[in-house]
Length: 197
Image (cartoon, rainbow, N blue to C red):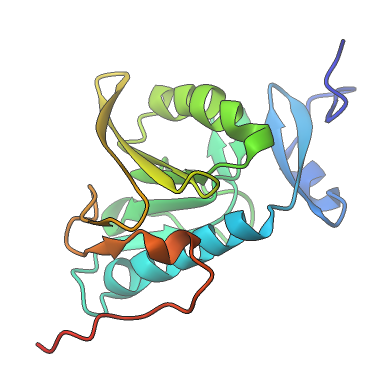
């Protein structure tokens, strides 16, 4: 039985993603347009907060080392076009395009898991990212409040750590800052550190 989310009449292209209906995110997988519903609130909260936590110190260099470009958007992996929840490139490797997907392979990708798509993130996408040389991969699961960190060694993912709950952690490749994991799943405002320099 075929997957109803996939439609294949001709190989799909970047232009086909412009016609994705409201309420869905589109990707191109094996030449097919795959539609995924817009994420649920816990997913969106974790993704948005992680972008905020990393964006200031690494993308903007505010209270951190800078040197990175942190983005959310479509990325070209060979013939496939995927949309990870978050991706980051070392500044010297980033290529900005006016239109179309990012073409440089990210140095880091994070997927925030939703129950219906957890297998895709942990199997299909992890294999694709390893094949194309993404160096670091995080999997965030708001439902069970965990964050898994993987490092690519050769063509194989190695577990660099697994964390959860309210832990305060420093995670590669962003060890320069401490992340309070509770910020990702608790329904409370972001509280910056009150420590004085």
